[in-house]
Length: 222
Image 1 (cartoon, one colour):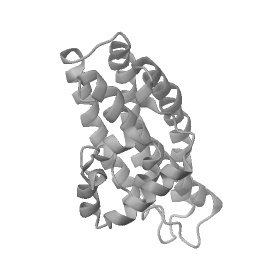
Image 2 (cartoon, helix red, strand yellow):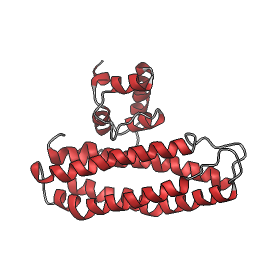
Image 3 (cartoon, one colour):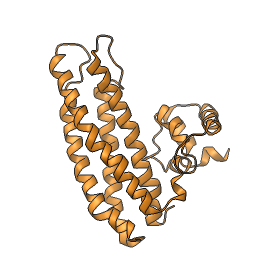
Image 4 (cartoon, one colour):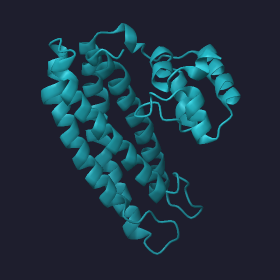
């Protein structure tokens, strides 16, 4: 079937509702967006027929997702900054504070995510540097119509850093047992894991819009 041979990033770009299915089954459509749906399912040990069925159901339900392939590069860059960059700066410090509280108060309890606060702090520092480079160098260049060779090197740097972000997300999942909340967890602990799961989903959508739309169009890949 043609959909099975379509890269995940292309599917996410053409049908934004598909990202809900990919997130649900942890199929990487941002940094791993060049893999076909068949390849991604095989790697994850998932029945592709089930994914195709869920994709069809999501498409039928529709949604309010913006179809960014019809918008300009400037509109997309502006949205990434105002929505995703702002959310990281707003939400990640709160998650760091919650992680440190859970580690401190529940240090002796099983399942405590020891070291999570430091990992999140380092991640925020990394993201701050990354976003600053996008906001001061690459995005202004793209808004001015930069394409091809003019943007190739900064795009490659940002995509490499996105790969690092994916690795950081994997570390966070490992520390939190895939966001499985222990039975003895307090309200802060539960809110922390819920917030981290939301942060992960938002970051994957964020990277998808950059890698598979903004950067792909600027470099002539899409």
